[in-house]
Amino acid sequence: MRVLAVDVGTGTQDILLFDGETQIENCVQMILPSPTQLVAREIRRATAAGEGVLLTGVTMGGGPCAWAAEDHLRRGLAVYATPDAARTFDDDLARVERMGVRIVDGEGAPPSLRQIHLRDFDYEAIVAGLQPFGVEPDLDAIAVAIFDHGAAPPGVSDRAFRFEYLAETVARNDLAAFAYLRDDVPPRLTRMAAVAATAPADVPLLVMDTAPAAVLGALEDARVRAAPSALVANVGNFHTLAFHLADGRVLGLFEHHTGELSRDKLEGYLRKLGDGTIQNAEVFADKGHGALVVDRAAAPDLLAVVGPRRSLLAGSALQPYFAVPHGDVMLAGCFGLLRALARKRPDWAPAIETALNRDRFTG
Image (cartoon, rainbow, N blue to C red; front, side, top):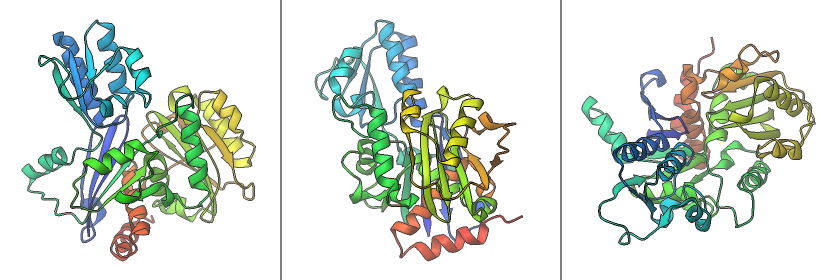
C-alpha cells in the first residue's frame, strides 16, 4: 500500500510517501515551503521587477500570497485574476475587486503580465522532486490536508461560518469525519473541492482539514493514545485548534488565530476547555473562530501539543507534552491522513493500520 500524504500549511507543506512494506522512518519524507509561500515569492519577484501579474488556477490558501498581492497593489502595480484564483483572497468577488484586483477571464488580461498559477496541491512538482532520487510514486492513493474556511454567504463572517462547520462535523464524534473521499466533498468547502478537481483523476483521493488531521496524527504518539482524557492542541503557523478527547469521544474544542495568542492567553483558553467553561462568544470576540463544549464529564490527564508554533507553550505551567508521533512532529498531519484514509476505505485499513501499529514508538 503506497499513499502520498501531503499536509499543506501556511509555512510548509509536509510530505510523506507512505509504503506499508517500509518502516515509517525509512519512508520518503520532505518538508517544503507551502504553496501560498511559493506564490507570494513569485508575486514579490514581479513587484521587484515592476511587472503586473495575472493570477490563474484555482482557489487556494491565502495569507502570505494575499499579503504579497496587497503589497503589489500598494506599489501601483496591476493584479489581474481569474474568478477561481481571485476567490483565494475572498469568496465575495466584489470585495476582491474593492482590493484593486481586476477580475478577468483567461482572455481579458494584457499579454505583458507575469502569469502565476495558483493551486494548493502540485502533484507534478512533487513527482519531479522525487524522480532525481529514483523514487517513482506508484500510488494506491493520495491524501491531502488543507485548512478550509468554506465559502461563507455574503454578509456572513468567515470565522463564524468556519466554526459552524466544525461544530456540525464534531457532532459525528469522529475526527475522521473531517475527511472526505473525492466525490464526497461538501460544496461549501471550496478549497477542498479545488484540490479534488486538480489532483490526478486516476488515483483515489482523500482530502481533510489540517487541524483535525494533526490532532488525529498526535494520537499516534503512544503516551497521547494511552491517556484516558487529554487536551490535544495543534498550534499551527496561522491557526490553533485544540480538542478535549476522552475515550475516543470529543468533549469540546476551540479554534483561534495563533498570531492573536500569547502563552498566557492560550493557557487560559486551554484551562477553560479542560474544565468545560470555555465560551464561544469569548473566543469569537477575541478574533478567534469559536468554542464548543459537548460534555464536561472528564478532566484531562494530559495536555499534548503538536504544530510548528508549539514553542508558544514552552515552559508553560500546564506542563505540556510535546508529542512526537512516529518520531516526527512535522508529519503529524500526514499520520492523521493515513488513519482517516483507513477509516474511509475499510478495504485498505489492514494494510495501513498494520504498518502504523507496527512502527508506533512505545519507549
